Structure formats: structure tokens, C-alpha cells
Amino acid sequence: MSERQAPVGALDESWHPDTVAVRTAVPRTPYGEHSEALFLTSSFVQPDAQSAAARFAGDEEGFIYSRFSNPTVASMEQRLAALEGTECALATSSGMGAITLLMLGLLRGGDHVVCSRSVFGATVKLIGEIFARFGVETSFVSQTDVEDWKAAIRPGRTRLLFAETPSNPLAEVCDIAALAGLAHDCDALLVVDNCFCSPALQRPTEFGADLVMHSGTKFLDGQGRTLAGALCGSREIIESRLLPVQRSAGISLSPFNAWVVLKGLETLSLRMQAQSERALELARWLQQQPAVARVHYPGLEQHPQHALAMRQQSGQGGAVLSFDLAADGPAQARERAFALIDATRLCSITANFGDTRSTITHPASTSHGRLSEQQRAAAGIGQGLIRIGVGLEHPADLRADLSRGLAPLA
Image (tube, rainbow, N blue to C red; front, top):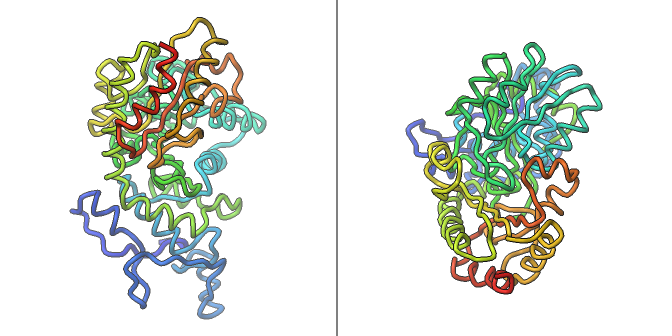
């Protein structure tokens, strides 16, 4: 056990994930608190100099410094790892921080990454441009074409395959098991961004993924309160390859933010079930609207990867959908999209999602606005595309809100 870990509190391997989500944590303090304690401290006092030396060397367990060891953060990590079915988790300051730590810990100049071109816009910039400065090359491929992934692999150089499923914002679903097979055939690792589904719906390691990445800012928190990220995987990868980098680089999650996510995990399953049901109802309604050209949602039977999504995502489509407006050309599409968004009164105009409150955004000018027009076109993100993160409002109110903008466009 490393210096950052503490024993897990009461945990029974027979427990259902819903029970794990409210009971996994470090043991209670002598005060016997029922809710997990919030340890707002930068450092921890050691009993003596010998113990301090042993703990800093990793020879003795114990908390040292909150940049890389804190009981509240450890509780959040243990709970998330238990939900994902992995040995360990490592919390970071944000989802993008998790990807940065992943790249720093596993890659070096000359290495090669194969990545879906459908991932989040900031991920494209980070992996494809920023790390290119340090000699890491990336090939961007079709989210859904396994042969495209296979053709992009460079034997002896490809170290990572990185996928986001479902993708942001078109909800394309990749075959995790097939990609895991490709990765392992070339001694690479498969990393899956599980932000859209969370472990409540999807556990990528069950299909062969080596690491699971999270933006805890989204569904893990669930109420738009904080920034957080995490990587989940084997003890060898997390503690031997990623933790040493975090310890030096400081890509760390604060105890308070960890506590917020820890509380969010307790209701994750209930929220994902309810929000997925609302999203499916809304997606079916949007399909019937004259102003809507296409709805992107894996819960719909018409979705190209519907069957695959149902196998991987516990039979649920998730809580994020997008749709294209009918329009004559990009200029009109953008104008119509902006008009619809501005007509809403209930949906929040923000690029975040995973909140109990529904959000609406125009990906081409927000989350993917820093990409070139060519990159957006390759990813299928047009000017008429609108993304909705479905919250917990009543479906009738969501339909009424969107009708304000859709009716004039019909």
C-alpha cells in the first residue's frame, strides 16, 4: 500500500454498485462521523522523524501532503474505482488535467497515439497539437470504423488508443472490445473517456479497456458545482507510472472538490437512470419536429450503433443528445441555431453538461470552436448542430421550452 492510500472502510465484494456508491470510503475517524470527513489541510503531522522518512520513501503508509495524499481525496478515489471495477483511481484537478497526466505519465517523444476524431475539442487540441510540440504524434481516425483504427497503428511506436464513447457531441459509439483487441495486439493501452455514461451505465474495463478517464465535473458531481477529473485502472499503472508524475507536477484535486464529487457519487445511479429516461423521451419528440433534420442519440433505434450502445451502456442511451436543424447552408444553419437557443427560457445556455439542470449549447462555436472548420467538418459538427444535456426537469417543460425556438423554424 502506498503512502497516498488508506485502508478502505466497510466494503463487501457482494454489494451492488448502488450500495458501493454510498458506502465505500476510508475508515471513519475516532469521532465516528456518519458523512465522510472533509480534511482541509495542506499537510499532515508525522509522529516522529523516522516515520516521516519512511512515509516519504513509500515504505510505510500514512498521509503526508495533500498534493498527493489526503483522506478525503482517497475516499473519492476508492469509491470511483469500486464503481468502475478497477484496482485504483487517481483524482485530478479536471478532466483535461487527467488527460495531461495520462500523456505525461505514459508517453515520451517519438511515441504515437491513435485517437478518435470525434472526441471533445479541447482533447483534440491537447493531444494533437500541444503534445506534438514534445514529439508525440497523433493519428485521428473514425470513431466507429475499427479498420480505420487498425490501419493507423504504427507497430513499435503506438502506445495509446484513446476513445470517447459516446462521443461529444454526436453520440457516436465505438466498439470498446474491438479497440481493446487492437491495442493489446500491438502492446498498446486502450484509454476510454467514460464521461457521457459514467460507471452507472458503462464500465469500459469489462470490455477490455486498460484505463478509464473521467471529467468529474459532469455526471460524477451531477450538479454543476465543481471541477474534477480522474483516471481509473490497475494499481501498477496508477501507482507506478502516473502517481509519481502527479506527485511532482501537482495535477491534483483539492479535498473540497473531492468531497463534492464524493457526495455526487452517492446519487449517480439514480440521476443517470432518470436523466436517461428523460433524454430518450425528448429525443423521440425531437424526431417528430419539422425543423429538425436529424437527432443524434444512441437510445434511438435509428441510431447507427444502437445495438452496440445498448450492450455497452446497460441498455440506456445516456443523458446527452444533439440534433441538426434543417437549413440551406452553414450561414442559415448558424442563424437558426442561435435563434432557437436564444428563445429558450428553461435550458441554461452553457457548454457544460451532466447537471440536474438541462443545458443547451452550439458546439461549433463553443466546445469545438477552437477547431478549424476542416476539423469540425471531419468530426461531423456543423453550424446547425445543437447539443442538450438533459437534466431532471419535467419532460413537458423541456418540450415547451424547445418549442419556443422550433415553432418559428418549421
